[in-house]
Length: 189
Image (cartoon, rainbow, N blue to C red; front, side):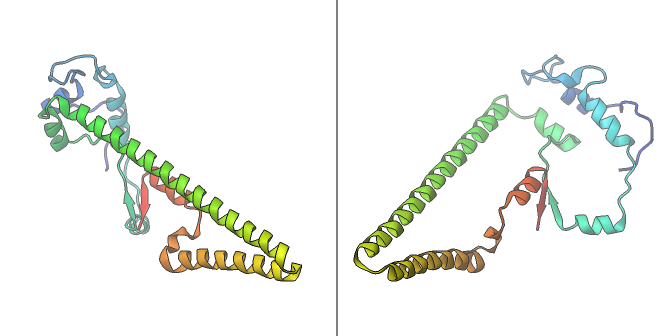
């Protein structure tokens, strides 16, 4: 977005002024519930900075950015959003916050159950492997026990690698770079 180089705060429309000066009670009156209703507050500073920056994206960068889905975690401040926000019932924001916390709690609980299940299965497979090797040591020679131990490990590694190669190839890496990029607002297609 191109703009002038001045850093003056933009002049707001009547709708923007009502939105930016809403009190925390949500009744549309002017109040001090938000930090941006003071002169030179957060929104005016950010909007002035963003409007003053000229766009310098090259065609090559535009083509590269076409492969990225950008996620917007910030509140959108535009006229349709402000109209919708001003007409919302009082409980809508509270209900959204409760729903977000409930979903976050459910996701956390399911992640914990999944981690418990993974640790439980890995422990049981390990116990089975070492019980099998201990029984073999009591009955068979060391060479046969070594072959059993090696064949169990190779078969477990083969199962894991086949799952990664044929079922879910994206599990090949750690996933940390992808998660960091996603949390920073980028999702590669």
